[in-house]
Image (cartoon, rainbow, N blue to C red; front, top):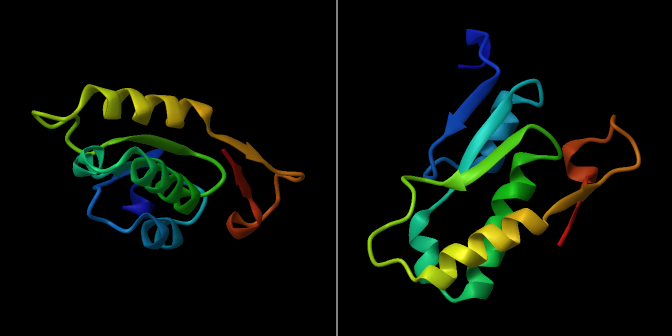
Length: 107
C-alpha cells in the first residue's frame, strides 16, 4: 500500500495503529479508527482509547474517526464525548523534525 502513490491510507480499527504507522512511515497520511464498541465503555475509557489511537498515529497526517460509524444503541453522550475529546486534542512540537516518539500529545 505504501508504494501505491496514494496520499492517505485507511487502517481498519482492528489494525494496531502503532504497527501500521511503523510500517508506513511518516510519508503517508493515515486514517485510523477507534473501535465503535468503545462508545459503550465508561467515558474515561473512551478518552483513553482516543488518546492512544491518536498518539500511535504520530504527530502529523492523521484522520481520526469511528470504524463503521456509530453502532445502533450507542449512548448519545458517548458520541458527543468522542467529538469533544477529539476536537480538544492538540500537538506540541518544538521542531518539525522530531521523531514520532518525541511528540507530546496535550489533552
